[in-house]
Image (tube, rainbow over all chains, first blue to last red; front, side, top):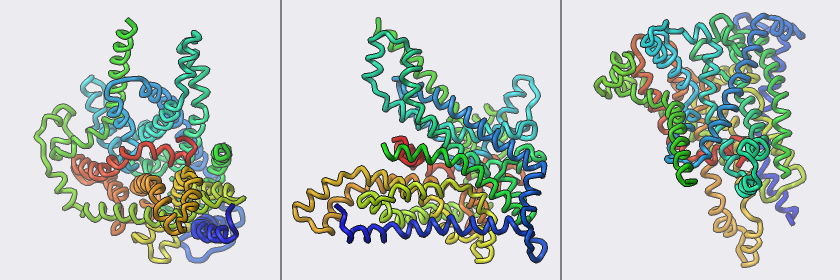
Length: 289
Length: 276
């Protein structure tokens, strides 16, 4: 159908986006790779070739393993809360009720709160051991207030991030639930399938794809959690709540070690790519359908 | 009988859903309430805070303390600027891919998406140094470009899925009726494309408004949007709960309202069309 003429026009229309994204992807990443092989500190003049030294030092420092463990804990913790919570909430919101629209709006709201606001609101208004609401409640019950962010920094950050992402999983799973075939459900009911059997054999298989999408997309974003850590704990105490992005930031912009930070950045890219590989296959499959 | 049980069931479901919804919304509600109290009252025990007199003083203080209006304006410029720029680049691209698909269109789309998978921290160092050397640190123009680039793949994808839904037959029908290419685009395609473009725009403004990696790394004061401004409250001086609440309320209110309008588009945009 399309003529040679319109093909050329189409190419011209696509090229600005392609060229810009190509430059955006290749130039800074190439520079990061280049820096990662240099002995390059902003405080000392000059650079020299370092081979794999930066990678060696980055990977062998204790902070890296802490950061890797924290990154994985953060991702898995938030995923567990948001996926199970999201399934439960979506099932609940899918039932007939009064004022469904308002409940939906309340549940979705946290997603629109910028990360620095949500983190600071939780840190000060709720988790603060003196003036926070949890401290007031604890005192009211005659208990010792608990200092969440210094006693359990990572768990507290998981809670804050999960609060921001629960609406996302709920919204997607609810959208998927609403596309469930009602007639199929009714037919199963008529045939005497119990609610549990209908849930297990009809609802869950229908949701599997959406759950996978939720897990993969959230993982991409959760691997890069940064603002919440910056404004609550600064990665501390020690490295108790330092994740990989925060470690790279600290090493390159706080310690001015450009070479080491770049090596860390490349490692973060590799980790994210492993997840991205599966996500891309998933979305690609969907594009065919 | 059956009717009665469904009514009871409905009541139970309603109560449970409202309770959970309220609990999830509560931190936001509490922040809004606290923003209308004085600093002294804001740190009181919850019930004392609630019953304390209402006041607007925090809203005034936020402005005098650090020129809130400037940061709000920066957020507006950054989110709208980057969104418009992304649309200008993405509309022709998505248009061509949807209506004149080639053999490699699918690969191209997947590749664009893959650029979104690159963690920002992987390019933090060179971006920071480039911005420093070009004198772009703490400038709005530099940040608009970065925000445009990080959201460009999502914009192309969303537009593509919307344009794909415009039936090709309609174009042929218009052509049969003797419509010129110009009137075809102007009177047939544009009206059908506008809803998709509008929802893409909406979602992208929300994402750019809340972006909190590059805005925190590349700005300090002059070009700082609200994400960075609010972050300055992480090392507070003196009493600040009411001021933080007022600043936060103003920062999230516009996006909450926009967000409620874009619930449906949100799902499509954030799952790259995988869930509609």
